[in-house]
Image (cartoon, rainbow, N blue to C red; front, top):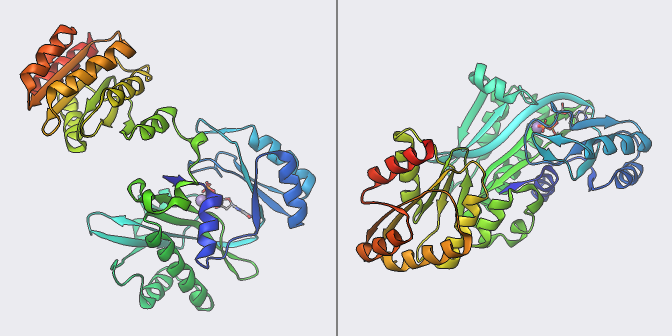
Length: 377
Ligand code: GDP
Ligand code: MN
């Protein structure tokens, strides 16, 4: 789950990270009132869950409350990378002397969290990572020990941070580590962390990704989810306990088990097709769940064929077939459907589905080839 900038920064502040004074607004009038309270120059920042807002014109300075209202009107009418701006953050403007990048994520290859920092922070960090990766320093963290003081100093040294800032930088880095680890984040990022003309370190931007599988133990974070920003299909999927990720292909995949779902996508690719989604309907797929999954897959207009790949273990295939039939009666898709059913009571299940005029397959290879052929027909 992605948090908005304002949510990330509020969380960072709880861990002692200095952030600008500010508040979020849903209307231009509110933006003006906040600007009045803050007094002086403000920055109006679109709150959408994509990066590169600055370059897209979604971040602008305003010198007065009146200008804040005008700018907010414009930004609230914008779309950034296809997402309508529904809220803006109105922050006290900072006078920037230098922009630093500081972030923590998981380094899967190293099997540890990694702190990354660069003196070349700001909006071009992706470019820096691509062209001059040596300008990004990386320090791995032992998850049991956490970020040690000497490591924070190593980072400060690595990015040539003037010594007068080391103490506060260490507090910020440790705060970010705590925010990351205590909230089960997969990313905690400050870009830019600025040195202001007044020689203060301030987190001007904030980004957090939280592991969805850990949200059950962070009800406060789960409540921050912004449903407006999410694809309808994903909200629906979560409601029914389905793991769903939309992709761009034509072959809708309905699979029980995450590993099997990934295998299915791989094999579809192998035979020249493109999956329209990742979908794990989970164990014991009831008719209700299958129907929900069908509706979700069919809501994607790119889908030309549906591939069911079901492995009956504890869940019996005839039960799943029954679920599929009930769902089909309700949803009535008018595109070809290929089904591969193996495991407990597979034969009984297959017979039930053949009557429903589904294309049956005995192996996954067979099923994938038939699905790819149907998608291309
Ligand atoms: P992003 O483009 O989505 O990453 O949004 P950021 O919040 O990082 O803002 C982009 C850029 O806008 C920053 O790198 C700064 O250069 C600039 N910016 C953001 N806030 C302020 C501010 O308060 N004052 C000034 N002068 N520039 C700002
Ligand atoms: Mn940024």
